[in-house]
Image: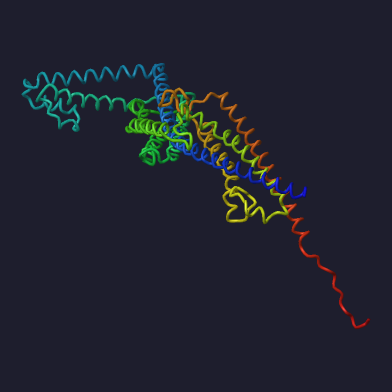
Length: 439
């Protein structure tokens, strides 16, 4: 009688535990699905934000390196005596040439001799001949500026400057840094996700053109030999188009997408509870792995408790079938699939969420928080908080593995006990004797 009483108590305890587990599983599942929808939507939004900022950051870095090349050359030439003297000679010759063109314009009506006109025209350039220099003052100015620029360029072609080894090495280092920034622009551009209107933020052809223009600056020797004309134009071969004209439009598109996302989240309904105001979506995202482990710790204990009662009712399989819970992980397939999924799902979501967090805050985050396109920055996170979160994630993983071990241990013990029951209930086989003719 005492045995029957214990069996009935265990059966009632199994029912109560299964009912509690069913409610807990449904609530935990609803929580996981709702928060997953929220944080994973945030991930793609924040990821595009990071890519936009990285490209903007590396574009500015490339600009700064090219500007540094120009400033290095400017500083070098400002201290070079020969360059200063030759520049004065060129400027004086250009000024005299300009005066001769102005004299021609002011006295063209009095120049009746053909040789006077030919003498002036022999000093001008055919490419500027399409401009009617005698029509208006504006047209004359265009004609004069065209000829003066070409005359000055021809003079500067005849003078050269040798940039010393130290300065050439500085230029070479800046070019390498610019090339590295362009490589980073290309890498981030390839990582662009589908949130933005285009598959890539910058056209590949634009990046390759920029890469080629930077490569053209690379010195081939230890010293850099340039004509004065090249000195004016050479560093400007890499005039940057790294940030396309429509990048500002992409930033506007992002801001509008962020506003739509925040409105949608604020109006979302949580099962049973209703509308939940998310004041800090970033905080929800960063704490989600820890919340998963906390929720799983309660459900795993219920799973373990249910398995323990099944072990105590190992001789009452027929009675169990009549009250079997859909959350029981020991039931046969295909019914067993759902409770097994509920055991494995928290671990999958934990890993996915940690990978997403690593991708946003711990990997490929080039730009600084004070240079983002939003204020406050969408991904701002102090370094000490990042370190603390890393420790919490590692600790949460260890705790989760401990609870999985407890469930697995309960299942192994159940399998051992069930194996003994099956062995004890199977009919015993008696030894057989063969008859031999010799006896």
